[in-house]
Image (tube, rainbow, N blue to C red):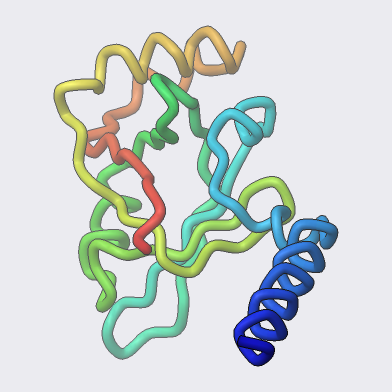
Length: 139
């Protein structure tokens, strides 16, 4: 019985230490916390190449992060050897396993949200963006 009490006490102490450490919470995927950021960086590793880093504008809709990719950027993401997992840097944090899922059904909503967030999107939207990706943590 005494060893059970010690184990419970140790577990409680460890839990309190984790909860008291803000850096543990700093690396949680939180789209609402990212919403005010202007860009994120996608990392993809194509076979025979080093990591390619793409700086992208993004929006948060319905609690999810969305990016719009040009043909060139879409080709890089699709040749990724870890597909559909990507590395993502946003708000000073790096996430190694983020799932990029095509979301063509939301392309129009993402276009409108991009126009609302970025004043220069009036020019950018005239270029083709055949791939709209929803980014969600891959764990």
